[in-house]
Length: 299
Image (tube, rainbow, N blue to C red; front, side, top):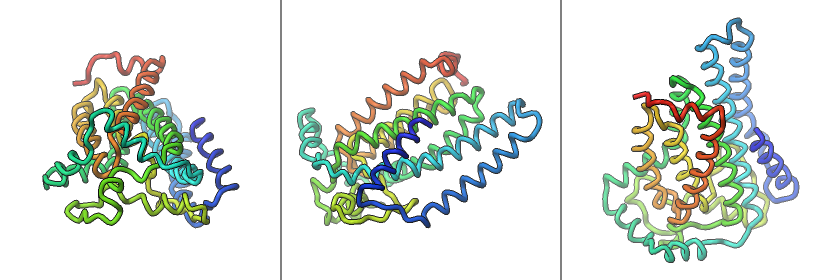
């Protein structure tokens, strides 16, 4: 909640002073979802016997989904409003870091482009992160120890805010545009890789009035990669549970897809991974979560 309060304060200040403004109609779908879920939560809380394990887990599910709906919209607005600050583009810097590490982004992209099976699998994994994260959260809610769902919710939200605020200082057109240009013929891919954000980024950096509509705000952060961070957090939350191997397999493929479909430089992946690992380790040491990750495996 503290992260969301900070996000709302920053977004509100930038909306009041910058070129971006909210379309009031965009609030209605989110408000409807929140009100419906809040009503269900209220019914559960008023029912006797909330201390029953099933009632407690159900309340956790509904509260968590409500929080995710609000958090996702708030973070998207934060992402777009902070991009109006128009810090210098960081493509030269990020590409230079890749080269200093001996990482060849272009060769990697072309290798994926040449493999139809890999192109399709990576496209699915990259674009399925949102709904698979929700499914994973629901599965964690019914895990033997449902506290791992709270761990995932908290680390996911904090990491999203950290990546979003950090990304405002390193805006970039990203690697696909740098190496191939915004007019490149990438029709061989099932979905357009790494160029989907350019229109929104250019408008926000132009200084002209920009209408923000909830549900139509693409992710604009290049450095650090939140897809990479989210994949690591998913694996961390699944540690010592039956979800670990499926989470590891999915996250490995999804992270591998981010240089192509997210247009990320490799240094973006590295920075996202470091942020996620740091937050995951710190949170796992909290008293309320330590027993979850130090117990025996669920199988």
